[in-house]
Amino acid sequence: MRILIAEDEPLISDSLSRLLSYLGHDVTVAAEASAALDQLHRESPDLLLLDWLMPEGGGQRVMTVLSSGQVPRPKVILMTGSPDEHLPAWLEQLPILHKPFRLHDLQSMLVAL
Image 1 (cartoon, rainbow, N blue to C red):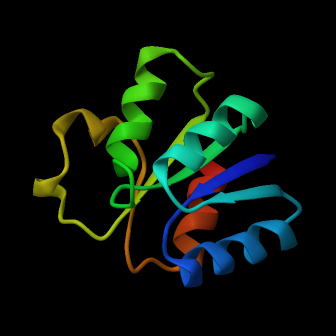
Image 2 (image 1 turned 45 degrees about the vertical axis):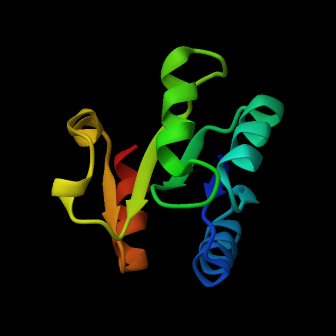
Protein backbone atom coordinates (compact mmCIF):
# COMPACT_ATOMS: atom_id res chain seq x y z
CA MET A 1 0.00 0.00 0.00
CA ARG A 2 1.22 3.55 -0.75
CA ILE A 3 1.01 5.62 2.44
CA LEU A 4 1.54 9.35 2.95
CA ILE A 5 2.36 10.41 6.51
CA ALA A 6 1.54 14.10 7.02
CA GLU A 7 3.14 14.81 10.41
CA ASP A 8 5.33 17.70 11.58
CA GLU A 9 6.89 15.92 14.57
CA PRO A 10 10.00 14.11 13.27
CA LEU A 11 10.03 11.51 16.05
CA ILE A 12 6.50 10.42 15.17
CA SER A 13 6.90 10.54 11.38
CA ASP A 14 10.24 8.68 11.49
CA SER A 15 8.85 5.96 13.77
CA LEU A 16 5.75 5.51 11.64
CA SER A 17 7.76 5.52 8.43
CA ARG A 18 10.13 2.83 9.69
CA LEU A 19 7.32 0.64 11.00
CA LEU A 20 5.19 0.91 7.89
CA SER A 21 8.17 0.35 5.58
CA TYR A 22 9.09 -2.73 7.64
CA LEU A 23 5.52 -3.98 7.13
CA GLY A 24 6.04 -3.70 3.36
CA HIS A 25 4.34 -0.39 2.58
CA ASP A 26 5.67 2.34 0.29
CA VAL A 27 5.90 5.39 2.58
CA THR A 28 6.29 9.12 1.93
CA VAL A 29 6.47 11.81 4.63
CA ALA A 30 5.35 15.46 4.51
CA ALA A 31 5.93 17.86 7.42
CA GLU A 32 3.38 20.56 6.55
CA ALA A 33 0.05 20.91 4.77
CA SER A 34 1.43 22.31 1.48
CA ALA A 35 3.94 19.46 1.17
CA ALA A 36 1.19 16.93 1.91
CA LEU A 37 -1.05 18.44 -0.78
CA ASP A 38 1.83 18.39 -3.26
CA GLN A 39 2.44 14.69 -2.51
CA LEU A 40 -1.28 13.94 -2.84
CA HIS A 41 -1.26 15.55 -6.32
CA ARG A 42 1.86 13.68 -7.44
CA GLU A 43 1.54 10.24 -5.89
CA SER A 44 -2.16 9.47 -5.22
CA PRO A 45 -1.46 7.38 -2.10
CA ASP A 46 -3.87 4.70 -0.93
CA LEU A 47 -3.79 5.97 2.66
CA LEU A 48 -3.12 9.31 4.33
CA LEU A 49 -2.06 9.41 7.98
CA LEU A 50 -2.93 13.03 8.72
CA ASP A 51 -1.82 15.08 11.71
CA TRP A 52 -4.60 17.54 12.54
CA LEU A 53 -2.31 20.24 13.97
CA MET A 54 0.68 20.96 11.76
CA PRO A 55 2.06 24.03 9.93
CA GLU A 56 0.39 25.78 7.00
CA GLY A 57 -3.22 25.09 7.87
CA GLY A 58 -2.72 21.57 9.11
CA GLY A 59 -5.17 18.77 8.67
CA GLN A 60 -8.10 21.13 8.19
CA ARG A 61 -6.53 22.62 5.04
CA VAL A 62 -5.72 19.16 3.66
CA MET A 63 -9.22 17.83 4.38
CA THR A 64 -10.80 20.92 2.75
CA VAL A 65 -8.85 20.28 -0.46
CA LEU A 66 -9.66 16.55 -0.35
CA SER A 67 -13.36 17.31 0.14
CA SER A 68 -13.36 19.68 -2.84
CA GLY A 69 -12.29 16.88 -5.18
CA GLN A 70 -9.18 18.74 -6.40
CA VAL A 71 -7.09 15.64 -5.75
CA PRO A 72 -8.02 11.95 -5.55
CA ARG A 73 -9.10 11.19 -2.01
CA PRO A 74 -7.26 8.37 -0.30
CA LYS A 75 -8.48 6.63 2.82
CA VAL A 76 -7.64 8.89 5.78
CA ILE A 77 -6.68 8.16 9.37
CA LEU A 78 -6.57 11.33 11.44
CA MET A 79 -3.88 11.66 14.12
CA THR A 80 -4.37 14.23 16.87
CA GLY A 81 -3.48 15.15 20.40
CA SER A 82 -6.57 17.38 20.62
CA PRO A 83 -9.59 16.28 22.61
CA ASP A 84 -12.59 15.31 20.48
CA GLU A 85 -14.49 18.46 21.48
CA HIS A 86 -11.86 20.57 19.66
CA LEU A 87 -12.41 18.73 16.37
CA PRO A 88 -15.09 19.62 13.82
CA ALA A 89 -18.10 17.31 13.93
CA TRP A 90 -17.67 16.33 10.26
CA LEU A 91 -14.50 14.44 11.23
CA GLU A 92 -16.51 11.88 13.18
CA GLN A 93 -16.67 9.68 10.06
CA LEU A 94 -12.87 9.25 10.05
CA PRO A 95 -10.87 6.79 12.11
CA ILE A 96 -8.95 8.84 14.69
CA LEU A 97 -5.70 7.92 16.43
CA HIS A 98 -5.36 9.96 19.61
CA LYS A 99 -1.76 10.86 20.47
CA PRO A 100 0.02 9.32 22.12
CA PHE A 101 -1.12 6.09 20.50
CA ARG A 102 0.24 2.57 20.48
CA LEU A 103 1.52 1.11 17.24
CA HIS A 104 -0.86 -1.78 17.85
CA ASP A 105 -3.76 0.70 17.51
CA LEU A 106 -2.46 1.81 14.11
CA GLN A 107 -1.97 -1.79 12.96
CA SER A 108 -5.57 -2.59 13.96
CA MET A 109 -6.84 0.35 11.89
CA LEU A 110 -4.76 -0.73 8.89
CA VAL A 111 -6.23 -4.22 9.08
CA ALA A 112 -9.75 -2.75 9.29
CA LEU A 113 -9.15 -0.68 6.13
